[in-house]
Image (cartoon, rainbow, N blue to C red):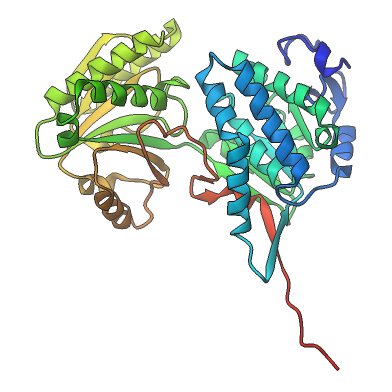
Length: 430
Protein backbone atom coordinates (compact mmCIF):
# COMPACT_ATOMS: atom_id res chain seq x y z
CA UNK A 1 0.00 0.00 0.00
CA UNK A 2 1.11 3.53 -0.70
CA UNK A 3 0.67 6.45 1.63
CA UNK A 4 -2.10 8.98 1.07
CA UNK A 5 0.45 11.42 -0.31
CA UNK A 6 1.76 8.91 -2.86
CA UNK A 7 -1.62 8.03 -4.35
CA UNK A 8 -2.15 8.77 -8.05
CA UNK A 9 -4.84 11.27 -9.07
CA UNK A 10 -7.30 8.49 -10.02
CA UNK A 11 -8.00 6.71 -6.71
CA UNK A 12 -9.83 3.77 -8.29
CA UNK A 13 -8.22 2.85 -11.61
CA UNK A 14 -5.10 0.77 -12.16
CA UNK A 15 -5.41 -1.73 -9.35
CA UNK A 16 -5.05 -4.86 -11.48
CA UNK A 17 -7.03 -8.10 -11.32
CA UNK A 18 -9.03 -8.90 -8.21
CA UNK A 19 -7.34 -11.59 -6.11
CA UNK A 20 -9.17 -14.73 -5.00
CA UNK A 21 -11.34 -14.68 -1.91
CA UNK A 22 -13.51 -11.92 -0.52
CA UNK A 23 -11.28 -8.95 -1.20
CA UNK A 24 -12.27 -5.43 -2.12
CA UNK A 25 -10.49 -2.40 -3.43
CA UNK A 26 -10.06 0.17 -0.67
CA UNK A 27 -9.68 3.82 -1.70
CA UNK A 28 -9.90 5.57 1.69
CA UNK A 29 -7.98 5.88 3.96
CA UNK A 30 -5.40 3.91 1.96
CA UNK A 31 -5.41 2.53 -1.56
CA UNK A 32 -5.08 -1.17 -2.38
CA UNK A 33 -6.66 -4.59 -2.18
CA UNK A 34 -7.76 -5.61 1.31
CA UNK A 35 -9.26 -8.70 2.86
CA UNK A 36 -12.86 -7.83 3.64
CA UNK A 37 -12.97 -9.80 6.88
CA UNK A 38 -9.85 -8.09 8.20
CA UNK A 39 -11.14 -4.69 7.11
CA UNK A 40 -14.45 -5.20 8.92
CA UNK A 41 -12.62 -6.52 11.97
CA UNK A 42 -10.43 -3.43 12.20
CA UNK A 43 -13.41 -1.14 11.66
CA UNK A 44 -15.44 -2.93 14.33
CA UNK A 45 -12.67 -2.42 16.86
CA UNK A 46 -12.80 1.35 16.43
CA UNK A 47 -14.74 2.98 19.26
CA UNK A 48 -17.74 5.14 18.55
CA UNK A 49 -17.73 8.58 20.16
CA UNK A 50 -20.51 10.84 21.47
CA UNK A 51 -22.35 12.93 18.87
CA UNK A 52 -20.42 16.01 17.76
CA UNK A 53 -17.27 14.99 19.58
CA UNK A 54 -14.66 17.67 19.00
CA UNK A 55 -12.38 15.28 17.10
CA UNK A 56 -15.13 14.58 14.54
CA UNK A 57 -16.17 18.23 14.18
CA UNK A 58 -12.57 19.36 13.66
CA UNK A 59 -12.03 16.62 11.07
CA UNK A 60 -15.12 17.43 9.00
CA UNK A 61 -14.34 21.16 9.19
CA UNK A 62 -10.81 20.43 7.96
CA UNK A 63 -12.22 18.46 5.01
CA UNK A 64 -14.42 21.47 4.26
CA UNK A 65 -11.48 23.87 4.22
CA UNK A 66 -9.44 21.61 1.95
CA UNK A 67 -12.32 21.11 -0.49
CA UNK A 68 -12.95 24.85 -0.53
CA UNK A 69 -9.36 25.48 -1.59
CA UNK A 70 -9.18 22.69 -4.15
CA UNK A 71 -12.59 23.14 -5.73
CA UNK A 72 -12.58 26.86 -6.46
CA UNK A 73 -13.64 26.31 -10.08
CA UNK A 74 -16.16 23.57 -9.27
CA UNK A 75 -19.49 24.87 -7.96
CA UNK A 76 -20.63 21.42 -6.77
CA UNK A 77 -17.50 21.05 -4.64
CA UNK A 78 -17.85 24.60 -3.32
CA UNK A 79 -21.45 23.88 -2.31
CA UNK A 80 -20.30 20.73 -0.50
CA UNK A 81 -17.51 22.59 1.30
CA UNK A 82 -19.89 25.37 2.29
CA UNK A 83 -22.36 22.88 3.75
CA UNK A 84 -19.59 21.38 5.92
CA UNK A 85 -18.18 24.71 7.12
CA UNK A 86 -17.52 24.97 10.86
CA UNK A 87 -20.32 27.45 11.58
CA UNK A 88 -22.82 25.06 9.98
CA UNK A 89 -21.45 22.18 12.04
CA UNK A 90 -22.02 24.19 15.21
CA UNK A 91 -25.59 24.89 14.08
CA UNK A 92 -26.13 21.16 13.53
CA UNK A 93 -24.69 20.43 16.97
CA UNK A 94 -27.17 22.83 18.56
CA UNK A 95 -30.07 21.25 16.70
CA UNK A 96 -28.84 17.87 17.93
CA UNK A 97 -29.00 19.06 21.52
CA UNK A 98 -32.60 20.10 20.95
CA UNK A 99 -33.50 16.45 20.22
CA UNK A 100 -32.51 15.40 23.73
CA UNK A 101 -34.44 15.96 26.93
CA UNK A 102 -33.94 15.35 30.64
CA UNK A 103 -34.97 11.71 30.25
CA UNK A 104 -32.94 10.71 27.20
CA UNK A 105 -29.49 10.84 25.62
CA UNK A 106 -28.69 10.34 21.94
CA UNK A 107 -25.82 8.00 21.13
CA UNK A 108 -24.30 6.60 17.91
CA UNK A 109 -25.86 3.49 16.41
CA UNK A 110 -22.51 1.84 15.61
CA UNK A 111 -21.47 0.97 12.04
CA UNK A 112 -23.25 2.59 9.09
CA UNK A 113 -23.03 1.07 5.59
CA UNK A 114 -23.60 3.66 2.84
CA UNK A 115 -24.47 2.66 -0.73
CA UNK A 116 -24.70 5.92 -2.71
CA UNK A 117 -25.76 6.28 -6.37
CA UNK A 118 -23.33 6.57 -9.26
CA UNK A 119 -25.11 9.45 -11.00
CA UNK A 120 -24.54 12.02 -8.21
CA UNK A 121 -20.92 11.36 -7.43
CA UNK A 122 -20.51 13.55 -4.33
CA UNK A 123 -23.78 12.60 -2.61
CA UNK A 124 -22.09 10.02 -0.41
CA UNK A 125 -20.25 12.79 1.44
CA UNK A 126 -23.46 14.19 2.92
CA UNK A 127 -24.73 11.03 4.61
CA UNK A 128 -21.15 10.02 5.52
CA UNK A 129 -20.47 13.44 7.11
CA UNK A 130 -23.65 13.40 9.20
CA UNK A 131 -22.96 9.85 10.34
CA UNK A 132 -19.36 10.75 11.18
CA UNK A 133 -20.45 13.82 13.14
CA UNK A 134 -22.86 11.84 15.31
CA UNK A 135 -20.06 9.42 16.20
CA UNK A 136 -20.64 6.33 14.05
CA UNK A 137 -18.16 4.12 12.25
CA UNK A 138 -18.70 4.19 8.47
CA UNK A 139 -18.09 2.04 5.44
CA UNK A 140 -18.99 3.44 2.01
CA UNK A 141 -19.30 1.48 -1.23
CA UNK A 142 -18.59 3.66 -4.28
CA UNK A 143 -19.10 2.87 -7.92
CA UNK A 144 -15.89 2.13 -9.83
CA UNK A 145 -16.90 4.81 -12.33
CA UNK A 146 -14.60 7.47 -10.91
CA UNK A 147 -15.04 11.10 -11.96
CA UNK A 148 -12.83 14.13 -11.47
CA UNK A 149 -15.18 15.32 -8.72
CA UNK A 150 -15.19 12.05 -6.79
CA UNK A 151 -11.43 11.69 -7.23
CA UNK A 152 -10.87 15.15 -5.77
CA UNK A 153 -13.08 14.34 -2.78
CA UNK A 154 -11.39 10.98 -2.12
CA UNK A 155 -7.92 12.50 -2.31
CA UNK A 156 -9.01 15.22 0.10
CA UNK A 157 -10.40 12.73 2.60
CA UNK A 158 -7.17 10.72 2.55
CA UNK A 159 -5.05 13.83 3.07
CA UNK A 160 -7.21 15.04 5.95
CA UNK A 161 -7.08 11.64 7.64
CA UNK A 162 -3.29 11.85 7.80
CA UNK A 163 -3.67 14.89 10.06
CA UNK A 164 -6.51 13.34 12.06
CA UNK A 165 -5.29 9.81 12.92
CA UNK A 166 -7.82 9.46 15.74
CA UNK A 167 -10.60 9.66 13.15
CA UNK A 168 -8.93 7.90 10.21
CA UNK A 169 -9.73 4.34 11.23
CA UNK A 170 -13.42 5.05 11.76
CA UNK A 171 -14.26 5.50 8.06
CA UNK A 172 -13.47 3.22 5.13
CA UNK A 173 -14.40 3.68 1.47
CA UNK A 174 -14.27 0.70 -0.90
CA UNK A 175 -15.29 -0.07 -4.46
CA UNK A 176 -16.51 -3.36 -5.89
CA UNK A 177 -18.91 -4.59 -8.56
CA UNK A 178 -22.48 -5.77 -8.05
CA UNK A 179 -21.37 -8.60 -5.80
CA UNK A 180 -24.11 -9.76 -3.43
CA UNK A 181 -21.62 -11.78 -1.37
CA UNK A 182 -19.61 -8.65 -0.56
CA UNK A 183 -22.75 -6.63 0.10
CA UNK A 184 -24.10 -9.39 2.33
CA UNK A 185 -20.86 -9.62 4.30
CA UNK A 186 -20.75 -5.89 4.96
CA UNK A 187 -24.49 -5.73 5.64
CA UNK A 188 -24.13 -8.44 8.26
CA UNK A 189 -21.79 -6.19 10.22
CA UNK A 190 -23.79 -2.97 10.08
CA UNK A 191 -26.17 -1.29 12.49
CA UNK A 192 -27.63 1.03 9.82
CA UNK A 193 -27.72 0.59 6.05
CA UNK A 194 -28.25 3.65 3.85
CA UNK A 195 -29.31 2.89 0.27
CA UNK A 196 -29.44 5.49 -2.49
CA UNK A 197 -30.53 4.49 -6.00
CA UNK A 198 -33.29 3.57 -8.37
CA UNK A 199 -36.16 1.33 -7.37
CA UNK A 200 -34.57 -1.73 -9.00
CA UNK A 201 -31.29 -1.17 -7.16
CA UNK A 202 -33.06 -0.61 -3.86
CA UNK A 203 -35.15 -3.75 -4.26
CA UNK A 204 -32.07 -5.85 -5.05
CA UNK A 205 -30.06 -4.56 -2.08
CA UNK A 206 -33.00 -4.84 0.31
CA UNK A 207 -33.18 -8.54 -0.51
CA UNK A 208 -29.82 -8.84 1.28
CA UNK A 209 -30.43 -9.34 5.01
CA UNK A 210 -29.20 -7.04 7.74
CA UNK A 211 -28.99 -7.95 11.45
CA UNK A 212 -32.29 -8.06 13.31
CA UNK A 213 -31.36 -5.01 15.39
CA UNK A 214 -30.23 -2.94 12.39
CA UNK A 215 -32.23 -0.19 10.72
CA UNK A 216 -32.35 0.88 7.09
CA UNK A 217 -32.74 4.25 5.35
CA UNK A 218 -33.84 4.05 1.72
CA UNK A 219 -33.67 6.83 -0.87
CA UNK A 220 -35.24 5.40 -4.02
CA UNK A 221 -36.47 6.87 -7.33
CA UNK A 222 -37.79 10.37 -6.90
CA UNK A 223 -39.62 12.93 -9.03
CA UNK A 224 -39.17 16.66 -8.49
CA UNK A 225 -40.71 19.77 -9.98
CA UNK A 226 -40.59 23.55 -9.95
CA UNK A 227 -43.35 26.15 -9.94
CA UNK A 228 -43.36 29.80 -11.01
CA UNK A 229 -46.17 32.22 -10.23
CA UNK A 230 -47.02 33.85 -13.55
CA UNK A 231 -47.97 37.21 -12.05
CA UNK A 232 -44.79 37.30 -9.98
CA UNK A 233 -42.71 36.63 -13.09
CA UNK A 234 -44.57 39.36 -14.98
CA UNK A 235 -43.48 41.85 -12.34
CA UNK A 236 -39.79 40.94 -12.42
CA UNK A 237 -37.19 43.25 -13.90
CA UNK A 238 -34.87 41.95 -16.60
CA UNK A 239 -32.16 41.58 -13.98
CA UNK A 240 -34.52 39.65 -11.71
CA UNK A 241 -35.52 37.33 -14.57
CA UNK A 242 -31.87 36.64 -15.34
CA UNK A 243 -31.23 35.81 -11.70
CA UNK A 244 -34.20 33.42 -11.59
CA UNK A 245 -32.93 31.64 -14.71
CA UNK A 246 -29.50 31.29 -13.11
CA UNK A 247 -30.99 29.80 -9.93
CA UNK A 248 -33.03 27.36 -12.01
CA UNK A 249 -29.88 26.34 -13.88
CA UNK A 250 -28.16 25.60 -10.55
CA UNK A 251 -31.05 23.40 -9.45
CA UNK A 252 -31.37 21.45 -12.70
CA UNK A 253 -28.06 21.29 -14.51
CA UNK A 254 -25.32 20.70 -11.93
CA UNK A 255 -25.75 16.93 -12.14
CA UNK A 256 -27.16 16.96 -15.67
CA UNK A 257 -30.71 17.02 -14.25
CA UNK A 258 -30.27 13.52 -12.77
CA UNK A 259 -30.24 14.51 -9.10
CA UNK A 260 -33.40 13.34 -7.33
CA UNK A 261 -34.26 16.93 -6.39
CA UNK A 262 -33.73 18.45 -9.85
CA UNK A 263 -36.96 19.47 -11.56
CA UNK A 264 -38.29 17.56 -14.54
CA UNK A 265 -41.60 19.40 -14.62
CA UNK A 266 -42.01 23.18 -14.59
CA UNK A 267 -45.44 24.40 -13.49
CA UNK A 268 -46.63 27.87 -14.45
CA UNK A 269 -49.20 28.85 -11.86
CA UNK A 270 -51.85 31.50 -12.38
CA UNK A 271 -54.91 32.50 -14.41
CA UNK A 272 -53.03 34.31 -17.18
CA UNK A 273 -51.64 32.55 -20.25
CA UNK A 274 -47.97 31.95 -19.30
CA UNK A 275 -46.58 31.50 -22.81
CA UNK A 276 -45.17 35.01 -23.29
CA UNK A 277 -43.39 34.69 -19.94
CA UNK A 278 -42.32 31.06 -20.28
CA UNK A 279 -40.72 31.73 -23.68
CA UNK A 280 -38.80 34.61 -22.13
CA UNK A 281 -37.72 32.43 -19.18
CA UNK A 282 -36.55 29.53 -21.34
CA UNK A 283 -34.53 31.90 -23.52
CA UNK A 284 -32.80 33.19 -20.42
CA UNK A 285 -32.10 29.63 -19.17
CA UNK A 286 -30.50 28.83 -22.54
CA UNK A 287 -28.36 31.94 -22.22
CA UNK A 288 -27.18 30.85 -18.76
CA UNK A 289 -26.40 27.36 -20.07
CA UNK A 290 -24.24 28.84 -22.84
CA UNK A 291 -22.53 31.21 -20.42
CA UNK A 292 -21.71 28.32 -18.05
CA UNK A 293 -20.39 26.19 -20.90
CA UNK A 294 -22.99 23.46 -20.48
CA UNK A 295 -22.84 20.81 -23.20
CA UNK A 296 -24.67 17.56 -23.89
CA UNK A 297 -22.69 14.57 -25.15
CA UNK A 298 -23.89 12.70 -28.20
CA UNK A 299 -25.36 9.71 -26.35
CA UNK A 300 -27.39 11.94 -24.01
CA UNK A 301 -28.53 14.04 -26.97
CA UNK A 302 -29.80 10.97 -28.79
CA UNK A 303 -31.55 9.71 -25.64
CA UNK A 304 -33.19 13.10 -25.12
CA UNK A 305 -34.40 13.25 -28.70
CA UNK A 306 -35.78 9.72 -28.45
CA UNK A 307 -37.59 10.46 -25.19
CA UNK A 308 -39.06 13.71 -26.53
CA UNK A 309 -40.35 12.09 -29.72
CA UNK A 310 -41.62 9.07 -27.79
CA UNK A 311 -43.56 11.34 -25.45
CA UNK A 312 -45.10 13.16 -28.41
CA UNK A 313 -46.27 9.81 -29.80
CA UNK A 314 -47.64 8.45 -26.50
CA UNK A 315 -49.04 11.58 -24.82
CA UNK A 316 -50.84 14.81 -25.62
CA UNK A 317 -48.08 17.33 -26.24
CA UNK A 318 -49.35 20.80 -27.14
CA UNK A 319 -46.00 22.46 -27.78
CA UNK A 320 -42.36 21.58 -28.45
CA UNK A 321 -39.26 23.78 -28.24
CA UNK A 322 -35.65 22.76 -28.85
CA UNK A 323 -33.70 25.67 -30.29
CA UNK A 324 -30.45 23.96 -29.34
CA UNK A 325 -29.27 20.98 -27.32
CA UNK A 326 -29.12 22.78 -23.95
CA UNK A 327 -32.89 22.97 -23.37
CA UNK A 328 -35.82 20.98 -24.71
CA UNK A 329 -39.34 21.83 -23.54
CA UNK A 330 -42.45 19.71 -24.00
CA UNK A 331 -45.68 21.55 -23.27
CA UNK A 332 -48.03 18.98 -21.77
CA UNK A 333 -51.83 18.81 -21.60
CA UNK A 334 -51.82 16.94 -18.28
CA UNK A 335 -49.60 15.97 -15.37
CA UNK A 336 -50.23 12.25 -15.83
CA UNK A 337 -48.02 12.09 -18.93
CA UNK A 338 -44.73 13.21 -17.34
CA UNK A 339 -43.84 10.08 -15.35
CA UNK A 340 -41.55 7.20 -16.24
CA UNK A 341 -37.95 6.81 -17.36
CA UNK A 342 -36.00 10.03 -17.66
CA UNK A 343 -32.79 10.91 -19.48
CA UNK A 344 -32.07 14.37 -18.04
CA UNK A 345 -29.72 16.53 -20.14
CA UNK A 346 -32.02 19.55 -20.18
CA UNK A 347 -35.41 17.98 -20.97
CA UNK A 348 -38.32 19.69 -19.22
CA UNK A 349 -42.05 19.15 -19.16
CA UNK A 350 -44.15 22.35 -19.06
CA UNK A 351 -47.62 22.54 -17.59
CA UNK A 352 -49.97 25.47 -16.90
CA UNK A 353 -52.31 25.30 -13.87
CA UNK A 354 -54.46 27.98 -12.30
CA UNK A 355 -53.38 26.95 -8.79
CA UNK A 356 -51.49 24.10 -7.15
CA UNK A 357 -54.73 22.53 -6.01
CA UNK A 358 -55.20 21.27 -9.59
CA UNK A 359 -52.35 18.79 -9.23
CA UNK A 360 -53.17 17.37 -5.79
CA UNK A 361 -54.69 14.19 -7.24
CA UNK A 362 -51.58 13.69 -9.44
CA UNK A 363 -49.04 13.77 -6.60
CA UNK A 364 -47.54 10.41 -5.61
CA UNK A 365 -45.37 9.23 -2.72
CA UNK A 366 -42.10 9.33 -4.73
CA UNK A 367 -42.57 13.06 -5.44
CA UNK A 368 -39.84 14.77 -3.48
CA UNK A 369 -38.97 18.44 -4.09
CA UNK A 370 -41.00 21.43 -5.22
CA UNK A 371 -38.83 24.46 -5.98
CA UNK A 372 -41.03 27.53 -5.86
CA UNK A 373 -40.92 31.16 -6.93
CA UNK A 374 -43.68 33.73 -6.68
CA UNK A 375 -46.22 31.55 -4.82
CA UNK A 376 -47.42 32.75 -1.43
CA UNK A 377 -46.38 30.76 1.63
CA UNK A 378 -50.03 30.46 2.67
CA UNK A 379 -50.84 28.85 -0.69
CA UNK A 380 -47.94 26.43 -0.29
CA UNK A 381 -49.15 25.42 3.17
CA UNK A 382 -52.67 24.92 1.87
CA UNK A 383 -51.25 22.74 -0.89
CA UNK A 384 -49.26 20.58 1.57
CA UNK A 385 -52.24 20.15 3.87
CA UNK A 386 -54.47 19.15 0.95
CA UNK A 387 -51.97 16.42 -0.02
CA UNK A 388 -52.53 14.59 3.29
CA UNK A 389 -49.21 12.77 2.91
CA UNK A 390 -49.60 11.76 -0.74
CA UNK A 391 -46.12 13.06 -1.52
CA UNK A 392 -43.75 16.07 -1.58
CA UNK A 393 -41.14 16.01 1.17
CA UNK A 394 -39.72 19.51 0.78
CA UNK A 395 -40.58 22.89 -0.71
CA UNK A 396 -37.65 25.23 -1.29
CA UNK A 397 -36.91 28.49 -3.13
CA UNK A 398 -35.31 28.39 -6.57
CA UNK A 399 -31.58 27.79 -6.20
CA UNK A 400 -31.91 25.52 -3.15
CA UNK A 401 -33.20 22.27 -4.68
CA UNK A 402 -29.77 20.65 -4.32
CA UNK A 403 -29.09 22.03 -0.83
CA UNK A 404 -28.74 19.00 1.41
CA UNK A 405 -30.18 19.17 4.90
CA UNK A 406 -30.59 16.92 7.94
CA UNK A 407 -34.20 16.55 6.77
CA UNK A 408 -34.23 14.52 3.54
CA UNK A 409 -37.01 12.47 1.95
CA UNK A 410 -38.99 12.89 5.15
CA UNK A 411 -36.22 11.55 7.40
CA UNK A 412 -34.52 13.50 10.17
CA UNK A 413 -31.06 12.07 9.56
CA UNK A 414 -29.62 13.26 12.87
CA UNK A 415 -32.31 11.28 14.66
CA UNK A 416 -32.14 8.25 12.32
CA UNK A 417 -28.37 7.87 12.61
CA UNK A 418 -28.47 7.87 16.41
CA UNK A 419 -30.35 5.86 19.01
CA UNK A 420 -32.17 7.28 22.00
CA UNK A 421 -31.12 5.96 25.41
CA UNK A 422 -33.79 6.69 28.02
CA UNK A 423 -32.95 7.20 31.68
CA UNK A 424 -35.48 6.76 34.47
CA UNK A 425 -34.45 7.11 38.09
CA UNK A 426 -36.53 5.42 40.76
CA UNK A 427 -37.49 6.93 44.08
CA UNK A 428 -34.81 7.33 46.73
CA UNK A 429 -34.98 4.68 49.45
CA UNK A 430 -34.09 5.61 53.02
